[in-house]
Image 1 (tube, one colour):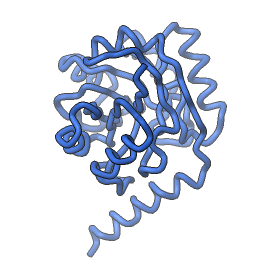
Image 2: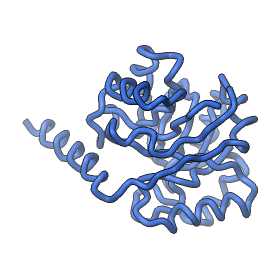
Image 3: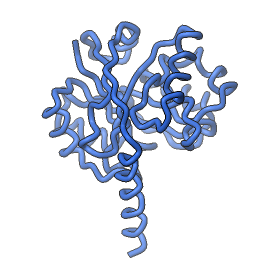
Image 4: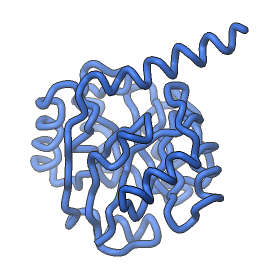
Amino acid sequence: MLKVEFHCHTNASKDSLTSPEDLIKAARKKGIDRLIVTDHNSIAGAQAAHSLAPGLIIVGEEILTTRGEILAAFVHEEIPARLSPMETIKRLKAQGAFISVSHPFDELREGGWEQDDLLEIIPFVDAIEVYNSRCMFPWFNSRAKEFAEKHNIAGTVGSDAHAAFELGRSLLLLEQFSSAGEMRKVVRAGVPRVRWSPPWFHLTSRYASIKKKLLRLI
């Protein structure tokens, strides 16, 4: 079984200071087998990491749509932010990406979804994120899990790590795969290993955001 991290960030995200090199070191130290790097509206960090460790890194992206955030793996062409959900999905499908939905019921994030909008897209995605370590309240994740079970859709889990020490808090154990198509075949049989990240973890991303804003002013 492969230990797969579906959701993490590098310094290509506005709210992370983690270099691709440090992310790779942390993944290897923690025994993670596949790392899907999902920066906000960018694949630059994922591509940089993939060039350093192609057997470990899968290029992904977390894309802000006009309704919520979509989480993708095996991305070859970057998708811009603030397209409609269906346009985003269309562009991802054109490149054969694996498509999930980030923290769909987290009401505290810009990337949260209204249920009607989520119902509209679920026939066209491969999974939804049923556990995100950074969700502040447990019912955000429990609602996602219940929704996935009710609508018979696969679930992914992720640490949503913005700092290297967070990496691997939530992993999905999967049978061997090497493409988006193979991932679709094995994801439903995935075994989750999840841990909640306490609220102070969010200080790392808040600090990163503030530091980057100040640097732009200098």
